[in-house]
Image 1: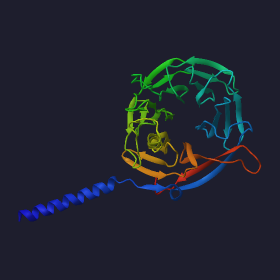
Image 2 (image 1 turned 90 degrees about the vertical axis):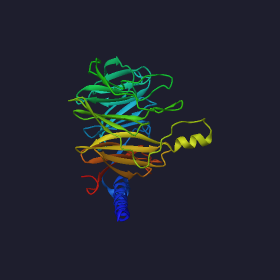
Image 3 (image 1 turned 60 degrees about the horizontal axis):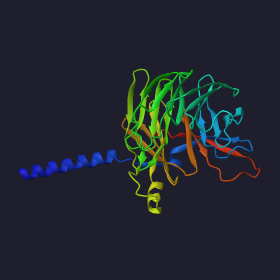
Length: 337
């Protein structure tokens, strides 16, 4: 009798274990089967402007910022291809690390060599410049400037903070955040990541870490999204720079960008270093949904219910135009409510 009860108990526990494993299994969905293409935009670039801009940002007002870092030229477009502004910052800035706009259209440029932020009017005239502690990425929130440190020297014991908040006049107002657990692979620093903001929250992540943090300004609390995707592959160390070690590095998955999506979702972009595979992950509290991406597109931002991507172009068209293609997609309702 006892043995029968024990067998039934073991069977019950086995069923519970199977159900639990199934509920924790993450299915990677196909992009083409899960997304609907909404619109395509063609942006004609100046002939001398690079066809592969180092920085592309979709702003909250659905305009685009494109940066030709080599020529230090900054363009702002509407999605219909209309040019809003076009100016060259080579007289002022040594290396454009990142660019951000505030709600009044004032542009801020982070110089990565001098650790200076330059403030420009809509017409491209310099208004102000001020020093910052350190940082590689930039965004604005309520006309304040956020500078995000993602590069950590292996020989430096810097631990916190990593985000510095400045007023529009360059005064340091606040700081927050801490260094990710492993921002280097041996002596190789990983400096990718992202920082975004809405009216009251800051979303930030680091390329080496599969954790996304959402900091709330109104109560100074932090929501942490740390459920790892099914495909993640991190590299803890490199034993040299030979071909086998470099191949390991190329297969490493990095978290490259994160965005706010709808009311309470976040979406993150992951890619292998060699760009052979990439993914989008949507997270909401403990829920995660994955989508594999085609190799020829990468995300540049979200707006309301839509996601915007750049489609990579290998050659100029038959008109010999210099251009980029922006595509606007929606996720099918059965995946994201």
